[in-house]
Length: 236
Image (cartoon, rainbow, N blue to C red; front, top):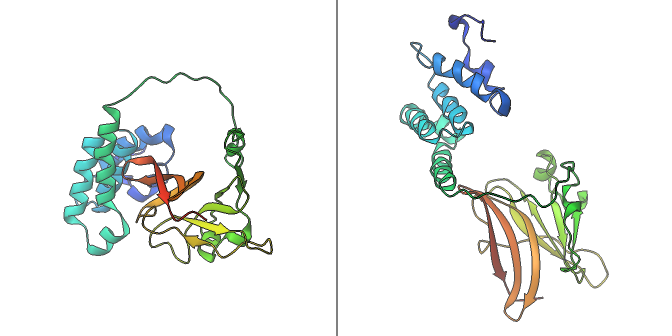
């Protein structure tokens, strides 16, 4: 790739490499050169920001995102969530300023489809399961989403993530209750006490309390990943 003449640079051809971490720095060299050319498409600055972003060069990424934002059409701004990406960069700077060394107690390699089997829930009593098709909406199937379901210790509640009937609010947390006949009721969105306009995933039911039930959930938004303990009531 490095032997290609500069006049053949085509930004979209290199974009496919950006998510592949080992090639980010190589691609960054090309995009940095490409944006210096006269008449370059403004979208190049968005992808320059993405390359900087994935390379942890957050200040450079913010400048590239802002350049794109200032010159972008309304349709491009709607298609590319640049404000959110800038927010993520600012939070990335904050997170990198508070690093801690980790002690690895055990190392085990698992596939992406069965990683949850490594969790020991013997004290909690719950069970992690792969979501069956009967709980998937048309949007879930279209997006090829397979959530990890948490089955409560009393086997009466299922918590899982779903796009619902559309993906306007991203993934939300849903709960389904077991009916008297043993079947599962229609899943219910847990509402704004938990769900936001960003993605929520990996719900974990903790315990019933007099004023409701405690649910742990991972919120995937501008702080990347944030785990919250939320009480939803009343208890059932």
